[in-house]
Length: 121
Image (cartoon, rainbow, N blue to C red):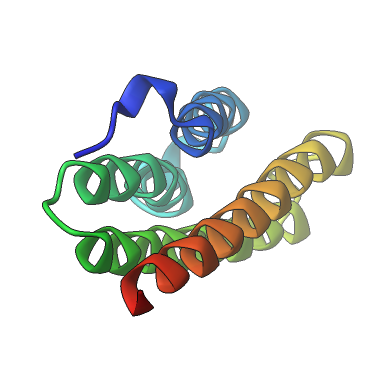
């Protein structure tokens, strides 16, 4: 079990979720159950899966949940790009979010590599 509040990857994922909520606040009302909801759920899923993995009893389980979190980050990335192409999200808002997502994906991959080494020992 890990101290969740000390995990940099979890804190970064929380920051991302907050920024996604802010960025999607002005999406069209008719997207409330579409891209707005999907983007927000994907962003929350990233941090939630990191948290669930951190609370598990083994590195192998944690690694699995990091994989799920990473998948959610790719979903989010796709949804935000679609929102930009539909003119719901400006490039000035999109680019920093994509940078945060990219950083989080790299961190997740690195964390998974570290856990893989731990598992193989």
